[in-house]
Length: 242
Image (cartoon, rainbow, N blue to C red; front, side):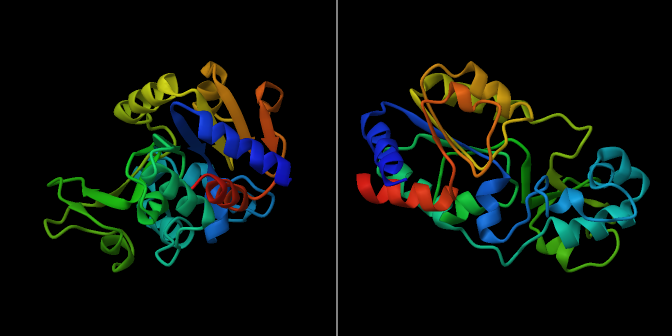
């Protein structure tokens, strides 16, 4: 394993432009459940399947149930950045990481100090009133019961991309530009079975590194595959180059 980390460190040293693409496995090390893992959110029992609850039509049709689920399963106000978030922020500050592209919605990359973070699925840290457009933080939902309301009486909706909603075009464009510029892509904590994650990797032509505890469909295309904790690997690699 140490040889693999050294190889990753060598890739970082020689890269002209590096990007990181992360999935739920990055956040699990901060205590946030993985939606699709064996013991994760998608395997737990609710009155409705999680895929149904976290959809735009369900938010419209059954807002009480949506917000009950949202508060219990998607908001983790006590979560803190782990070794992966901290290492990526260190690498960016040193000029060795150009962008972090994330499928996560927890804002932990920014909390760790990363600046150029591209959030493909939005964030739980921002909400918007559906009537007046006022933006608020997660406390606007956590501090209320039932359907959270703005002072104007409008419903407060999380700025998270729900099922049936399109990914933000600006985030997709920024991610595509970052991937096009990069000659090193590090993928961590994602199965790469869901688009656009798989699409970004398939279109990438530079050096590809995948860090994931379980195999992914793109492993055969990678120059380096490390089956270990994303946080542990990135921390050790950052220590070698910084």
